[in-house]
Image (cartoon, rainbow, N blue to C red; front, side):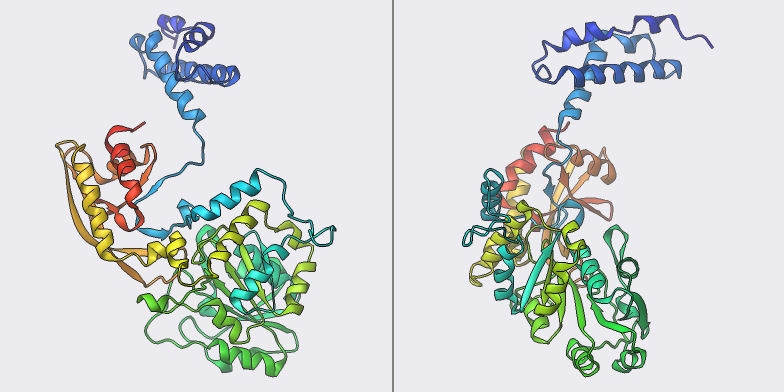
Length: 465
């Protein structure tokens, strides 16, 4: 089949580039990027003509130029962008987990813009060790003898297991063989470390005698894993840390606890379900503990390893520790976050993750009312909005059964489905990430702050891409 004659009238690259050079929105874009985009748009247009999807009306210079400008603006946007989290999930793994406090960000900016003593001991004038910059803080807050830090908790678990148990058997309850986001599975990490997995008990019930029976001369570790993003309820039984530590000491076998989220405050004081604190795990006598820096701790992505001095020393000497080491910006953010925990009276207010968790329903309702008022001034007539009472979740693999009362803006459109609405709001500037329940699009105000209200209103109705 011969291509239509009008395909020869597609605008030329040079002509289109000349037209772009006088367009204020894109004239700053590098020439190489502009040329590549023009060629891409023209090739796509040619293929569409050959496929019968475009006709002679579609090749006019203004239309082609408009598409090129749209593509250029989209291409020059940062791929990693800030979004409005209106999902109500506080530690949202897909949205970057914890929001950092302003003081933490300021410290990161200072370190990023200057040289630093990352691995330089200011007292001796000799080479230093980066983990030392936060070790005393971590030990002071947790009660551990020693501490080190790597890039994330998966790395912390892998490093600890490989250091302490390579070639040995590790005993763990079947009910704790978890898989979390990104297909991270404890059995896979254990296999990668060189340890041999020994499962004991059943999915819902594990007893101390199960551990005792499984111990052999090849046993190198007793491992307890936080169940993270699920919970087993009903006819259940599990072994306490105190019991495991007692068994480990009697058999001279170390005990490790992968806490997952990690937690340094008493959540029960604010009416939340009990979540063990790192301090409690250390007090129970556990030899080595791993947890995340960017979940309940409310800091940057990091994997903290705390415990007995001899074991932390061994972990540091593992060559893998260098491959997993923390960078200077993360280290700056972690130190600034940990310093906030030194004052229990102000830590909840200063750290956004904790502030979102402990936010009172009355405050959230007031935010919802203000948001509804702002949105109502701009919304199309075919869109209907009401305030509804719902539940939020903490997220990040923490307290999976815990719900938090919240207020949402429920949005229904006469001309757009909830899924189309979700797509529309994701293309706003900044993107707005809500959730869908019963075919209603919801903006959960637990994770929307008063300062976000004008931004949300403007983005939703007047700023789509």
